[in-house]
Amino acid sequence: MTRDQGLDGPAPDERPTPAGRRNKQGIRIDPEVEARHEPRRTVISALVEHEPGVLAEVSGLFSRRQFNIESLTVGPTDEDGRARITLVVEEPDPGIDQIKKQLRKLLPAIAVRELEPDAMRRELALVKVNAERPDQVAAVADMYDAKTVDSSPQTATFEITGARQKIEAAIETFSQFGIREIARTGTTALARGTDDTAAPTPPESSASEANQQYTQPADDD
Figure: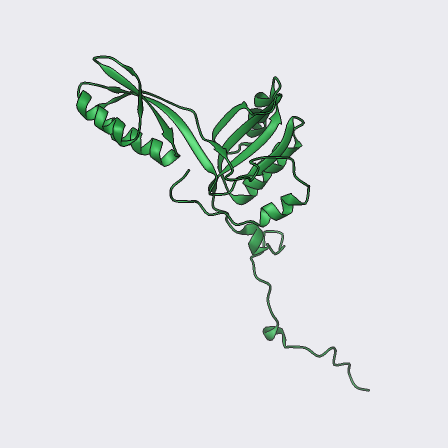
């Protein structure tokens, strides 16, 4: 009799080895799962029912989940009974996906969408500075199209509107005179052209949205 030779195949040292390390239990970890996801800044627009407690419900969601929210603005829309919430978040992609999914689960939420990088993003800031050098202060205000909203022999307060980079550049330049106080609204945004910022969409749109690649424009938020 002859001994069974087994199945044909490569020698043990020639067999392919799966990528990835093993944990303490000996289970191999998928490299894609273990990969580190770098955070990115993006804008999410949510159309919600304009009713008491909506903002508290949204902010409570973020607090419980410990999402990194950079700014949150809310205000009425052109439709009675509806409000728009604009969020600027800085999270890895899995975190951004979770934010959108959790927002869509809220009962007052009508539509939730991550905006494209070319969306119109604007912020308003009030900056109160020392005015001992009025001519130089006025020159800086002109440079950033700032509007004077209050002035006295000691201070001047300016209203600045624009992209986040413009606001931060103006604040840095005004700092040479000494800044007394700053108040900023946070970013608000709308999609460009005829594209709806956040309107009810078919469920399958969520899958296509996740496949889009986003790049941060150099001249906006």
